Image (cartoon, rainbow, N blue to C red):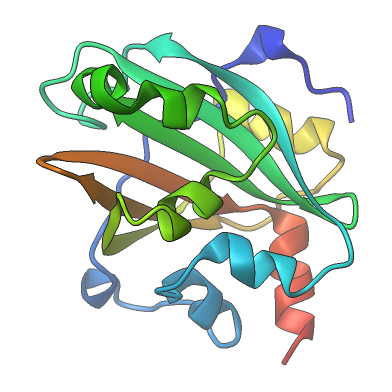
Length: 188
């Protein structure tokens, strides 16, 4: 895998929708993964011998237009979630600047620990709605997928979830990479 920090950030602007607004969601079992209300980290860990977080980059950056309204800067962290050495999920987290002021130790000390452990075990965060999106990777994300030697002949699916911390919300977007979709479909 020839991923470098020089390409960070990899994320791109995606149109997200409520699942009930999508005319045709993917078939099971992938649909259940996409809409799972619990921790995706825990679900992933239950399907492998070795779970690994590969940090692609983290920094205070401007979000994409419309990604985190009214925020000039956000702490952005992008990672790959790997199962038995295979990247399954590209995840992008956006933490508003004001939340970083009050809870930065939670985020800056993560290292290679999954964010899901913090969000679902600390009691400080409340999971919110899930939105989904189907899109064709372009630009940096497409280059990332190519560098992972995963062929993307079909549109990708992802989910975006909001987590509340007091009166602030952070956003976690999780894109299922082509290998994940292939392997999940075989679980049926």
